Amino acid sequence: MACVYAIDAYGSDPAALPHILDQAFDEVDRIDRLMSHYKADSPLSRVNREAARRPVAVDAELFDFIADAMRYNRESGGAFDITVGPLMKAWGFFGGEGRLPSDEELAAARRHVGGAHVVLNPIEKTIGFDEPGVELDLGGIAKGYAVDRVVGLLRQRQIAAALVSAGGSTIYGLGAPPGHDGWDVTIEDPIDSRKAALTVTLKDRALSVAGSSQKSFESGGVRYSHIMDPRTGRPVQGMLSVAVLASSGTAGDALDDALFVMGEERSRAYLEKLPDTEAFFFFEDAPRAWKVVHRHGSASHSYWRQHHESS
Image (cartoon, rainbow, N blue to C red; front, side, top):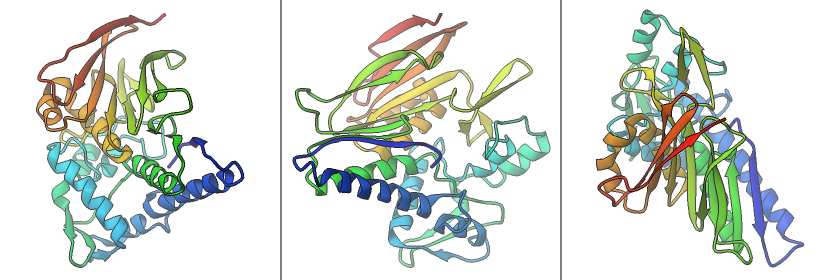
């Protein structure tokens, strides 16, 4: 999953705790083997190779997860899209640092992007594509799913408090550490990663962050990030990062990308349907400065703004 997983945990049995955490990391490895599109022998890679020729049967876990990802695609109006792989390749972000595609490359990639290309059969648990060139990329949501699986395992093993982090961009706070109300987690400054922008407290909820600084390149004085708008085929402009507080890592991972693409104004109606979700939208406000809008799912308008000057 191209990131480091870290777990801080408190348990009543110090002798058993290391073994439990080994099991948790083994679960992360299992999810990676199942859902990686970089590993040629993964079940997902098999789907990408064969689903345009015939429907591919997969196990129930992978099928249900992909079906859930497609639900986020529909609910976000296509802003979150696991078929975005051809665009990532066209823009040079698949295994690279990015580049400007030609108009012909971009047009060819866009023809293979969109949820309508994916045919799911819930009875047979098969996945098919309606044409060659379509592929699934679960990189925008699988990290959160692995975090959720780890949290579920820790709960089963009676771990009272744990902080599970996938590269710092998807974090779940299980319970609270001794003497605290929850896990205090910082959201980094979207311009200067050495600084903290905000601190949030996690207790049985997840923080997921999508940021333009994670992977980007500059050409002709314009900076292009790796976060694509699947509907236009181009990187999103103007947004620095979006941080989402949600009930699960899976939901947070899907929503931070979707809200990043939709933007704060167009996200309002979507967030009103998600009363347990909060989002922080970080915008460019001036050279080396940002503005944040904090929106709660049940709120009809933003209620907090802050300006920050980065030195």
